[in-house]
Length: 29
Figure 1 (cartoon, rainbow, N blue to C red):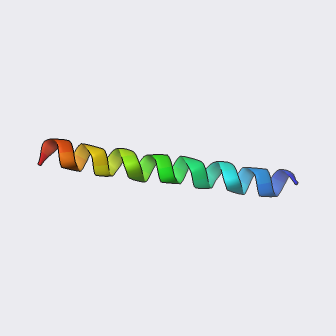
Figure 2 (tube, rainbow, N blue to C red; figure 1 turned 90 degrees about the vertical axis):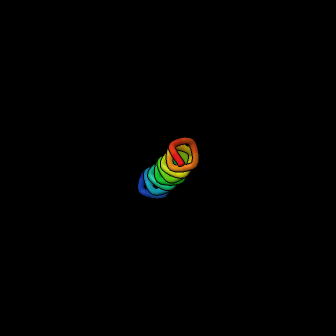
């Protein structure tokens, strides 16, 4: 359970990070 929750959390953080990077690239370009 804990491992699955941790994996889900890391996935959400990763997706948020990717969206932030894409947003910054679009904003600067």
